[in-house]
Length: 239
Image (cartoon, rainbow, N blue to C red; front, side, top):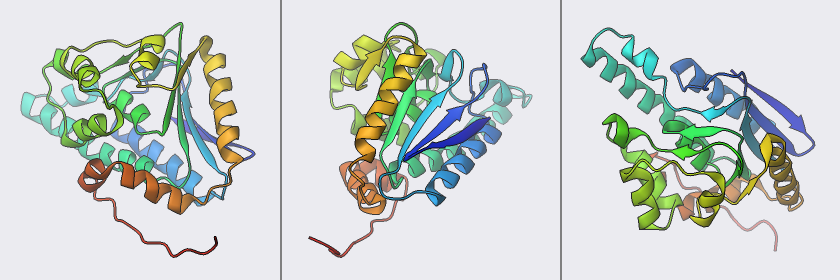
C-alpha cells in the first residue's frame, strides 16, 4: 500500500499502485505504520516527502467499503469509523519532527486533499491533477478537524468558500495563485524533482525535529487542540 525509501536525509513515502489510493482502514493503518518507521529513524536534517504512483495522489475515503455494509446506517457507521481513524494521520503529520512535503502527482480529493494539506509544503503538477473537496457534491458534512485544518492552512476566506462550498476543482497553476500550493511543475517527474530540491534545501538546515514540531503546532492552535496534541516546553540547550 505504501513504501518508505531513505535517500540521504530524505524519507520518500510513496502510495503505491495505479489505483485511487482510497483511504480504507487498512490503507490508513499502512500510512501510520510508514510514518512511525520514518519517525523512528529521524535525525536532525531529516525531511519527509509523500508522493504516489498513478493518476491519483488519493481519492479520499473508501466509500465503496462503507457502502458495502449493506444499509444506510451501517454505511454511515463505517464512514464515521474512517473519519475517526484518519484523525491520527493528520495529528501525526502536524506533530511530525521534521519538515514535510506533499509531492502531488495526481488528483487529491476529499480526505486525500486533507492528507496533502497536512504537510508543510504542497507541490503539484501543472499539466494534470486537481485538488477537490467533493463533500458538498456528495451531500456530506465536514468533520470538525477537516474544517479546522482548512481554516488554519488556507488564509483566504474566499478561497475556502470556493473550495468547500462550490466543490471547485483546482488545477496546479490556479492553486499556486490561490496560495494553496508552493509551485506547479510539468509532469510527475517535474513534481518529484522540485520536491527533492526543496527537501534537500530544508535538510541542509539540520533543524532539531522536536522544536520544529512544536513551532508548527503553535502556528495551528485550533486544529492542534482538536487533535489533542500536547504542548512541550524545551529548555535552551545552546545559543
